[in-house]
Image: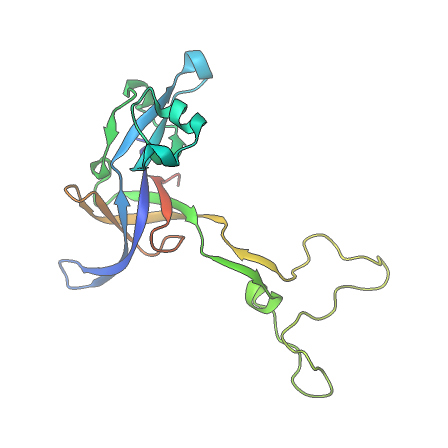
Length: 207
């Protein structure tokens, strides 16, 4: 059954299982989320729901965002559409909490990686440094030859310096180790993309 929720990455810690083994986990504040919009086959061609997460002051929302959420009576900062199998049975205003997932399930977590700004090719692509001797220099932390003379241009996709990080990444098949329904927390095994406080989307795994 397809399930999904919006959450916030709180950080990493460790949990001990019954055998005393250490399990590194990432703690996610999952929900509560509210159904802001419902899409149906009759009107939109498919069944889906748009969830809203994290309350925000109304004055901080744009005019279109206020009008969009007026029907649900919410003021949410983050919105995300999910194609859930039980979307047809949901209605605007319904609340989804962390208890949609249970320990032992596998999930996919999507988030934005940490932004590292404009970065050199050595750090960005893990290229080798230039030789430190034999007259090579004075700069060593740069890429080598850009290509040959024949094309007289640099081919698209060449690994060079540029923006590094702040891209959408999905970690697949992460095990749900623990779910705290009262605090709306989900602990998944391993690391998930993004910094502490970053918004993530948790879905049922596709594999």
